[in-house]
Length: 340
Image 1 (cartoon, rainbow, N blue to C red):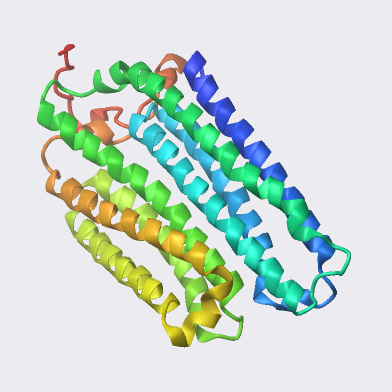
Image 2 (image 1 turned 120 degrees about the vertical axis):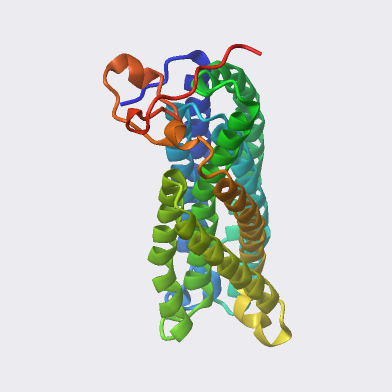
């Protein structure tokens, strides 16, 4: 089991954990305040489901971030470390959007008398909702500084396993970016789907069942995408790229549909947060398609031995684990690089 062994690896992990703990504590307080203020029967309204949904997404988002932090440090994956800083910016945007959405939800619920008369939900929750993006913004700055230090720390550990050929380095960089994008695609797709199912759809809708069914299929597709890339399976990658284009069409369709006058009221309770997730997901899908095509073009050019994992023989090797450990099953790896 991997354990951080330097100042900056420990710092990156600890800052991510502290940020998650503070934000989830604030969100938990807002959730408790909100739930205690509701009258009986308010749970049937879409607005009453907004705060529980946001809290659930934040819990999942930060737990998933901690998993990715550990994974990035274990693999000494510089690209994923940088991606986590950008991921934090995505959480910052979401935290900023939720403040307006929660205010609107509280206003609607109070208008229809679903909130108790003596409850000052907005006044109590507002300071904590302001504090959440501030904490995430500060965490993003600190994580970015540490990421810069980790970039220097991981540079030699990573690239000494790749030959001196600059083209090979670029191929490996493309592979790293693609694998990192798959990990972030998972969260933003799932985040959009959870909000869409919980806040917008009714359980009796046909679309509800179809949306639920798509979740395990998407997870399987993302797993296969990584597997076929490592195995350099061209036919599999063609199928995956086709799926990406279908997903892109789906999210663009949802974006347009949310702002159609005939559907406006259906999406109103979560339109801004859904838009945020949909836009980020569309950007990620476009980047994923570009990198998937680039990875496919790099097949059969000597990268496969560097990225096929092998069983580590001893504890010393485990400390040096990276994503591109060579596999002896594929023959000798080209000579190691020298410092440029």
